[in-house]
Length: 252
Image 1 (cartoon, one colour):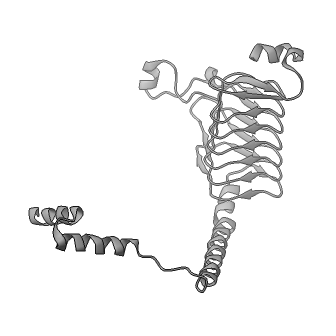
Image 2 (cartoon, helix red, strand yellow; image 1 turned 45 degrees about the horizontal axis):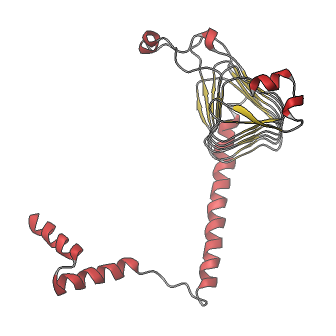
């Protein structure tokens, strides 16, 4: 073993003419590639198109005959023009209601907590709303998302903390108490940026833009942009901040 290690070190360092030649030969082998020239490029371009066609055709077959029927079996209702890509990761049992034109891009997670003493937790997504890859919905009571919403990848929306604040109760493995569960309501035409977090009890007004990575801890009035942790209003989309209602100025 030591002899092999010493030989490897000598080749790596290129010590002497023999090991230098071996190192140079190995480097050329590792750097070799099939040439794509003016003559071969049309061939490989055609092969690439065939590769994409086969890949997308296979994905369509799996989605149509496997992912979508499995997911529909877990939903209370789904409107027309529904589109999805990968099978969402679902934990627990709850009511999933999707409007018409809803699109699930990539793989979302839908986690229902059934240990809080509450029944029938519900996730509702309105017409023509988009959910990006890696979004997580954690529902113990109710998360309602309006129509024409855009939820970017990695966003998290939850109506409970997941664990009690009391350390002893956490150590005992208890869930969030029922009194700590508060529904989340998101209005229409809301855009939630990548990686944003919407916490329990929050109501977001219509046409709000939530910046990437923002953490929303309290209600947001309509027609504003919020960013940061905790999220604060940085722009009003409909009227100057000085003319905004008291609720807008209080949030700023």
